Length: 372
Image (cartoon, rainbow, N blue to C red):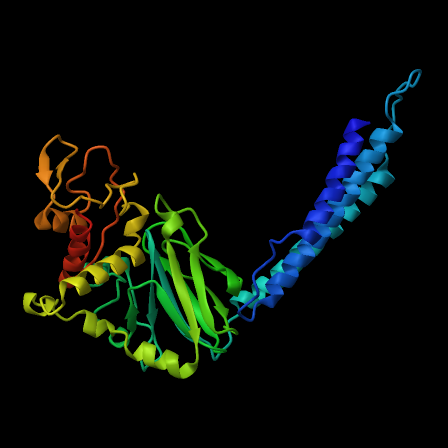
């Protein structure tokens, strides 16, 4: 009796929670409202089965509960009952799968007028690439990846020379324009997810996946990695800025081309043109957008890597028990050759970063500013 009452209570509570819960989907900001419809249909079908099956189970418990003098008897197989159960189950599975398959077919069936955007994921940050005036993305390959070519573009492919390179995790898109999102990973499995767009797709190492979308709302929307990709997964975040065509055009024109990124790095004289405060601000932003703060706290809290609070000037013990003082030279080596000198007690999980001289100086200035 108690089990039957509990099942009925669970059914009533579940239905009430569904209708009264404050946790609803965020308003959709792209053309993929069909994904919401498919999800709602799935909830209706699974919810109906949940309610019906639990109520039947509660009725069976009450109907055939133990009574003095009641004995059990053998019931032979019922072919008719089996046929009904197989039929109802099959209809339910088809009703669950068909809408999702139809929507997925539309999700990857890209319109002819869609613009190209490449999304590159790596532990633990996002990078992007737009085609240049030729509207073609240059070829890329893992063998071309280097400190000055982090996206691995083929330097001999003329189609890639004018590609716009975005090394920060902020992606701008024009309002109402369809975009084909090409997704690739440099290391492990990631997942590009913008909840408000209802857009979600895995980045699989060694292949290029894709989907398309059309932004329908102006604003800023979070990019999340929805696939566990390592210790810094929780901080692999970015931002999509949806704006008018003119604003997008100005932003894109300000981004460097691949050819421009292959020019020699800034000279020491050019680095010196930034004030100390500007370098610190730049270093703080670099630490945030490149996921450094996922492992290195700035307030003394323990993390996967040493805290940056009071790190500068400190004497650190390495994994081989040697001791090194944290100065500019040490920090430069730690950033560019992350696993060459490991601090004792910390794992070798820091990815290889491709910062230029100015960015290195900015990060060192920021770490130095955290030393009391």
